[in-house]
Image 1 (tube, rainbow, N blue to C red):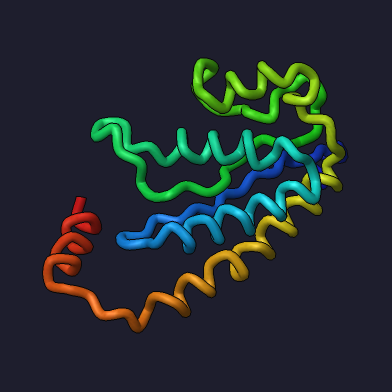
Image 2: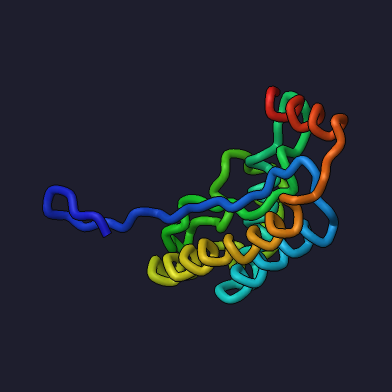
Amino acid sequence: VVVASGSAFILPIGAVADLAPYYLGEQQCTHFHRTLKDACDKHDPEFYNVFKLWCDEYFLVKHRQECRGVGGIFFDYQDGAPEKSLYVGPDPKSAAAAHCQSLGPKGHQRHTWAQYFAFVQDAGNSFLPSYVPIVEGSHKKPHTEEQRQWQLYRRGR
């Protein structure tokens, strides 16, 4: 809650967690997404579905029509206003927007600010368990010169 000029108002909540690896196995990707989904599902069974689609939209490199990574979750402007969709992104024709519309009232914000805040905490606390096992399983793996050149190419774009 923010107080300005004697009036209190609630700031909307937003966050992002995504994974943009150069080389990643299917098991690692599945683990990352499952951990985020579990955190989302504790609060609303539609959070992961909507926020993953929104993340895919947000991190699409449009001029290349290329995903930046393997996705994650992205959300913003969650303040509990029931007239607002869970998707409050820029493209009303996006997959996330269409999914929200298909849900009817379940596609609208229907949680209190405190519930969204608890969700943000759980989503944030899920990041290390989703990511650390990937690093621990990958950082000592050998790589080829070709893989190194691909990594440098991707970083330099």
